[in-house]
Length: 253
Ligand SMILES: NC(=O)c1ccc[n+]([C@@H]2O[C@H](COP(=O)([O-])OP(=O)(O)OC[C@H]3O[C@@H](n4cnc5c(N)ncnc54)[C@H](O)[C@@H]3O)[C@@H](O)[C@H]2O)c1
Image 1 (tube, rainbow, N blue to C red):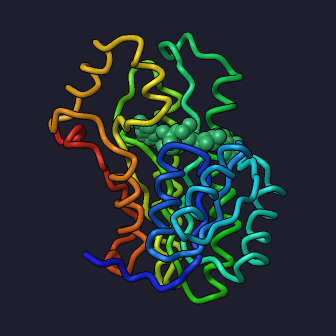
Image 2: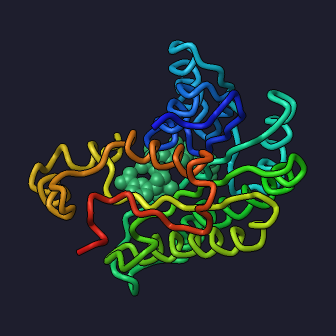
């Protein structure tokens, strides 16, 4: 399936690594201009270098998504760099190892909710006026399969990703008539550096993670990127307010 892009502008948060980096690369490979954003400057500039080395057009803008003024400045930088914004992938997120609910603490709650929920809300708050002003566009937010059901020992993370889906659906309905589509992608376990660091030490954990998915393996960052590009493309023109699980069948069990 060929995508329907022709030189538009995409913004990706949390683009210094993992799913965000792969999606920024995928947008660039389709000919889009990409604003790569993250708090990790070295990683973000690394993503831009990879895109330019492959012949693409990208720039890095540092932004902490928990800060209103920084998110506002990110949109201003996008406009001054490329003159418009067509697609936003609000992907920055953190996952802090937690115990059971009663063992959690306030600092973990505030940190996880700050990045995963407030960050997505602030990004959409400052993106939607740009999309409305130019007659439409698409937003994809990164939720998780932990946004669709229980996540034992990760209750705060699960709550944050349920909240991302709540923001996604509400915004989708509010702006549907204005040609702004808003969807979420819900990955299961994806092979990222973070996953490798955690599981390299213990191959049994890696086997357990693979077995959680009916397809018998964990996912690839490129498989999430492909879903995000589809949700942004005109092929998904009738799709809004959805939380698309990209999970090797994990939530079908
Ligand atoms: N990897 C998985 O298995 C998996 C599964 C489901 C959902 N997710 C979600 O996917 C998204 C990307 O995760 P990833 O696996 O690629 O992890 P990652 O840690 O490689 O990427 C997350 C990025 O977000 C950035 N970030 C963190 N706090 C930020 C802030 N305040 N402002 C701006 N950027 C910030 C980090 O610097 C990092 O580059 C997250 O929202 C995560 O919750 C990941």
